Image 1 (cartoon, each protein chain N blue to C red):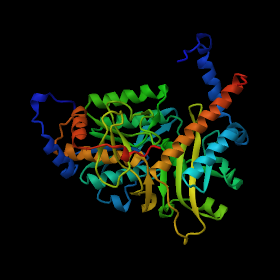
Image 2 (image 1 turned 180 degrees about the horizontal axis):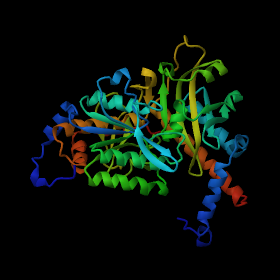
Image 3 (image 1 turned 180 degrees about the vertical axis):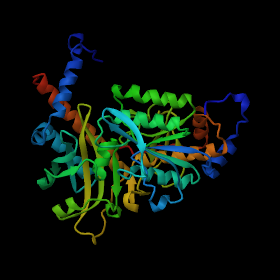
Image 4 (image 1 turned 60 degrees about the vertical axis):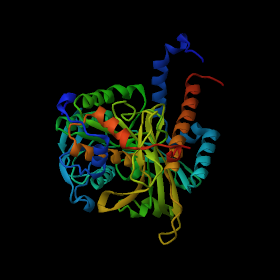
Length: 266
Length: 190
């Protein structure tokens, strides 16, 4: 899954990428949802190919990767998986449960979950979470974001809901596809070239799968990020060798241009 | 631009540590005194701006097992309400540190009706955003839109702009409290 030299590859044209982004199914692509777990019994996910269900748990000062048993603590990960599954129905999705209110080591759980996903060969990591842009959070998250980049793993992360210019990790790392909410009802993705969080998609009042087999109407950047994840999965299902750096270029080329009317900032 | 004063900044790590200690030891009774009139004004202004019926500040208890309502506007009857930190949207926001907005809450089979029953109301829409003091996660600020009973028409609901406004509210509240704590710790009168 490492970057390949250009001479090995027949690069697709932008029209071919656009076609893949619209018509790809996600087949053959593995997406890790780093979140609160995925409820594999939810009716909306019955055709989902759940390749892993892992729970990262803090036990006696150690972090263990245990069997997640298709369980979601809160519903958030199930919602994220639902959005991805709708847009890239043939992608394999793996659940890496790292969100646990009682853990005192959230950053370490996240880092362990991400590394587990990278080691299991996932090509895309969906991170619908963010840690505040404080210095103490930079290095732990930068380490795994860099490892993902080096190994050719695509990382998609939700930006701050307050303001996409407010630093949050991992969305503010340049190697990560940071995603903001676009005030739109369309399924388009939007590109804003002069921002670290360059992409946006709809994330307002989205009906998503939640716990107990039900649905909820949710708003947040958490639900915009999976739209970029599924778009990447569609492209990778047709062109599996596209590296994160090339993917950024392709996505920015096929996205619609951002305009101020899409902003939810006050 | 004002440059850091080396005679003061050499103590920055110590001051930061004391500030964090103070932040983690704030108890619910002290909270209203800490936010003061400016904090109350900011809370009420945000509530009006997003057309919320109620806004509440939840603080985690010492072992982070429960979230406790330490302040609520306009009805103070909700103050003291406790909820497990592993249940519901408020808990999710505390665990994930990611703000969320949920409309049509009644669609959510997992939504706890305990608070609604106690208050004699029906929650239709809810925003919850993490709340930090001195850079440390201490709880959640939530806003709700209500209706009198399940048969009544739904209110307008919250938008991404409302979520954005609540997230800013949390930041402003943190800065007000940090300022109050810092001036106390340094025995400053400014």
